[in-house]
Figure (cartoon, rainbow, N blue to C red):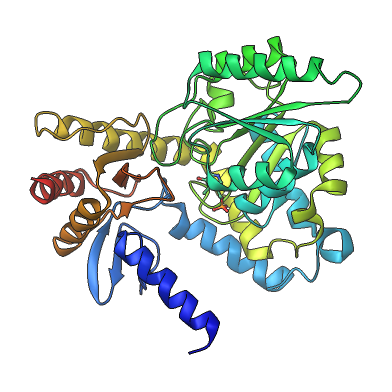
Length: 396
Ligand SMILES: *Cc1c(COP(=O)(O)O)cnc(C)c1O
């Protein structure tokens, strides 16, 4: 074996020993409530397709039309020759949806976080992030070279302490133009809980910091117009940078930022994952555009209502079984703790016909392994009831 192969064999064995080895499961069916894995039909309680838009006839139709009109590829990056009218239409629709002046789309949410954060802050600045933010934000904050500080999850007192620490640091280095960017998620991806956004906005205003929120799991679900927590809390106009993904409730793929016209003009010039990457493909942008429009329609309102009704039912069904969950959203974590036990419970559920896989380190902290159960408007009451029974049996 070559040196690389020997080393990789060793590293994979180490992961396996720690019950942290992962592999891909091939799905032979479209994303839907029922998926087929290795020829076995499973009820899917693990997707982020909260409204069932990933297989919605209208989105499929719009994606097909876009391929016929625009082709399959976008040709180049947006600044070279890939800035299709379709992308601009999507951005205008997104800006209006988010109550912002402008928006810009990226090929993924991960690329969005990377491009935006590294464009906004650098070596002389400070990044303050919630302990549980998504890996894309952690990676971006590190890559930016800014001084990175982490505050305890949703802990306002710890956030304020951190802001005071940064203030003291800044005073000791007068002269430099040092900025502070606070970054949090609005709905947390692995815990399903909600950030105290109003108070975070008040703190960032008090300390003169900037705020960026990742609405990946709130977009399409929260607020009267279903645009996210910023809208639900009446904070439109008070958050500098609103980011999210088009790959979850919106039913397509890609990421976006919404904010001031000046912010977007700046990102077009400085966000490297935007500048040096091929534009999103037409089918993806057309499906996202249809998804945003559908979310704003009466059908979107009805789908959100059904999705939350399933969550409420699950919480009612679970009460009295001894199992606990804490999420206030379609993300309902069942904390198991031990990685090996979580894997075992996930496997046992799979045998019973349910897909709700174990989530382990490094996606969540060591010893905080869990089943991440997610609900969609496409689940029936009966399917939710079946899941509860299977969960109780698998964990007992
Ligand atoms: C999924 C997710 C992302 C990444 O978005 P993609 O479009 O999947 O790359 C970023 N932030 C959060 C909080 C997410 O859950």
